[in-house]
Structure formats: structure tokens, C-alpha cells
Image 1: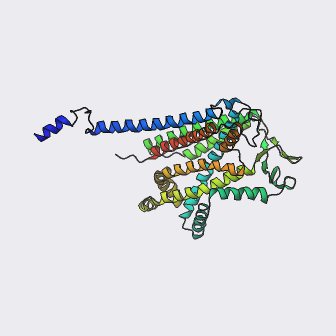
Image 2: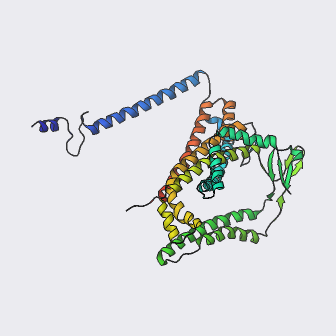
Length: 399
């Protein structure tokens, strides 16, 4: 009788929600509405209070300043830029410079970190100790100090421009960085780029076909060599078909600096080297822990089948270790990208540096900071989405 009373007064009807705080489902909905309402109320208070204070001080708001003339120069840019361009274009230059450091740094840190991580497990005592020493020294020094070290090494350790080192004809090393020759502009370079993309797509198709063929017939196909031939061979054929141009734009000393060729500035060298080596030390530990997580019986089984050490690592151990390596590796990629904001300390014109100059000139700090935060958020989420997709792709499918 008592059970029937509770059902009538507090419990929800079968398949529905009772409008009573004693119903857990209804109570959870009420709590969520209250939390969302509190967040919206706090956000509204902060925004309205900020806008009111800005209006009292006659400070302009909005993003109209992005269309005004920037009137400041930028030392390095992947696109054409001059002080007559707008703040919006200057901001784009900063985003591209940040992406340049992040993408190249992630690729180099992955390669170096993998080599160091595998070396730590080497049976050679000297190689293992050298790898351990590298990891313990580099990862325990703050990245900002490492950037200062590499920047001072170039700016103070190398000679002035007129006494530049010339180790190879056309290559110069000085306090202004590294200056190297580049091929002169020619339509064939665009054709080689298209051929490279075609080669990559064709290599991907050959790889899938080879896997399907092996699964169907059991016969292996040298897909790796075929892919390498397509990726390298097609651009070379396009270069030969275009007349095989060999002319180079050679650097020459003109006045107080070099002209011609391409320059790698001390700032870019310092930020790329510092972040790459620092992140590679952490990636090495991620790789080492992933390899040791694979059961030793897998190695013994591979050796029992007659596989040498190299193929055992490449074909048996690493594919299984990747399932452990990828999640923490994603965090290291995000750290490298966000640490690129340290470039401000050595004068590299990254996103933060250019946005900082912009907000100092326009006085619109809130807009500048929101643009920086939004850009880093978009880049970080893009990296996370890609790595989560890859992690799901290589995940072990259990029945």
C-alpha cells in the first residue's frame, strides 16, 4: 500500500517525466537550465559592463580597424606585404608565419623524437646513453631559455655580413642568418607541383590496390618502391619535359646586406630549432613508452618467424605501439603550436607579435586578444580533429 502511494505522488508515469523535484530526470533538467542561465547571465554582465566602460572612455569597438592602413613593416612574410597594406593583411601574415613554424616544427620534431625514442631502447650502450642524456637535458630547460640560446648563437656567434662564412659557393652564413640560392621563376615549377600531387594520389591508389591484392591472393607487391617512384618520378619527368631549367638566383653582397636567393633569418632559425628540439625530447619519451607497452612476446614471435630487428620494429612493434603513442603525441603537437607564441621574445613576427603591434597602434586590445584566442583555438581544434581521426583509424577493432 505504501509502495502504491509513492508511485502516485513522486515517481514518473511509465515512459514519461513527472513535474516534481523528486523525479531525478526532471531535477536534472532543472539544474541544467539553472547552470546555463547563470552562465548566460554572467556573460551578459561582463560584455555589457565592458561595452559601457569602453563607451565612457570614448574607445572605439568593433573590427572596422582591420580595413585601415597598418603603416608598419614586417620582416618576414609568405605573401606580399608592405606598410601600405591593411591591418587585416598584416594579421594574415602573422597567422601564416605561425603556421609555418608549427607545421615544419611538428614534422621535424616527430622525426627527431622517433629516432631518439628508438635509440633509448637500443642494445648499444653508447647510443642509449646519448639518447637518454639528450632527453634529460633538453626537456628540463625552459623553452624560452633555449630560444635565447639559439638566437644568441646565431646573432653573436656568426660574423658580420661583410665577413660572412661561405662554406659552399652561393651559401652564406652571417649574423643576418643563412642565405641560399633558389631556382629562378619558371612555369615548370608549377607543373612539377601538379605532378607531385598527382604522384601522391597515384601512390595512395597503388597502396590500396596492393593491400587488396595481397588480401585476395596472398601475393605481396612492392607498394613502397612503386609509391616512391611515382612521387619522385612524375615531378622529374615534368621537369625534363619543361626543358630542365637549371638557372639559379644566387645571393650577392650588395651594400650592407645580401640580395638574391632566400634568407633564413636568425629569429626563424632560433624559434624553429628551439621548439623542435624541445618537443622532440617529449616525443622521444612518448615513442619509448609506446614501444615498451607492446608485449615482449610479439618480438619473440617475430624473431621466431625469422624477421630481422628492423622489419620487426617496422612491421610488428610500431603499428601496435601507435595506438599508445598517438593520444599523448597529439598533446605534444598542441604544445609546440602554442609555444610558438614565445617567438615574441626574440622578434619573430608571429601571430602574437603582429597582433600586439596592431592593438598598440589602434588601442583595441579586446578585439586583438579575441582574434589571437580565436585563431589559436581554430588551429588547435584542427590538429585535434585530425589526430583523433587518425587515432580512430588505427584503433584495434575488437569483435
